[in-house]
Each structure stands twice: as structure tokens, then as C-alpha cells.
Image 1 (cartoon, one colour):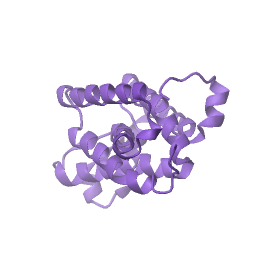
Image 2 (cartoon, rainbow, N blue to C red):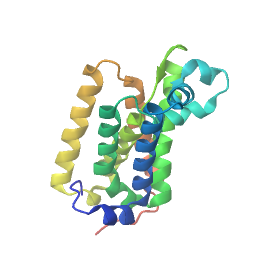
Image 3 (cartoon, rainbow, N blue to C red):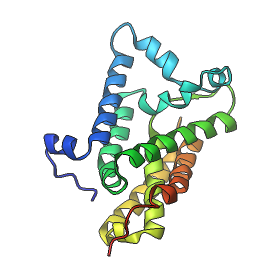
Length: 198
């Protein structure tokens, strides 16, 4: 489930949503770091609480596709490529988009309401933690979709991710936590019509 064995062409065919999100991550990162438009991208795509309070509500979405450094974009995109495909297959394209973006936006809304007006952030981590939240629901209520080995991998990765959330400077802790909560809250609705496995 979490081991990628597909070649590039097969991955794109099997997981079109994740492929598109990955491409957007990389394109926005390049635009934000190369050329005269770089300052424009960072200025208008950052999740600035102050500017959100002034009505720039697109900033609840744009941080999800924007990253500050190469390691930042590679880590989040790698996490998406490893942990996203199984959920895209289980949920289907539309519900996967709702779960991923929904968790990310809810995390950004929480960031807006709970952190100071001068706070600003970027990154897809809230949405990535939303995927973990969906997996937590599956682990609890739809166990048939996770084998024993996958459960162990998931728990280890989630514990490691939470530890780094609280120990790494500059992390939007509330964004991570509310992404996780949002994913778990959205999961029952997203999984409602997914057939049970025997």
C-alpha cells in the first residue's frame, strides 16, 4: 500500500489527482524561486492572517500549494506520493480532492482564528496531516482497508510526524493538528459509500 513500484507513466495513469497536485507543487515552487514573478508569488500566496482579515480569502487555499524551500516542497510532495495513492484508490478522485483540500483549508481557517494577525505561513502540511487523519478513521472504523504491516507503518510515521511537529522550529503546530483533526472528521462522510471489504 505504501510501497511505490509503479513506473512514472503508470503512476500518472493510476493516480491522476496526486500527479496533478505534485506538478502544481513543483511548478509553484519554481515560479516562487525563479524569475521576476517570485516576489509576486510569495506575496500573494502566503497565508497571511492579516490579509485574510482584510478579505483576501484565497489565502486560505494558496498556502497548500506553496513552499519556501526545496527540502520543504520535496518532503511534503514525497509524503503525498507515498501516502496519497491508496486513498485516491479507496475514495475515488473527487472525494480524495475534497478530503485533501478540505483538511488543508480547515487547518488554515484554524490558523487564522487561533493565531495572531501578524502570523503568516505556507506549505501543504495541513493537507498532508489530513490524509493521516483519514487513515486514522480507517484504522479505527474500516480496518479491512489496512493490513497489519501497513497499520504499523502508519502509526510509526504518524508518531514521528507529531514528534517533529512539536520539536522543529517554525512549524505551524496548529495547522498540523487541525489538519489531522479535519481529516478524521471528514473521513466518515468520505467513506460513507465506500463498500466494505470482506
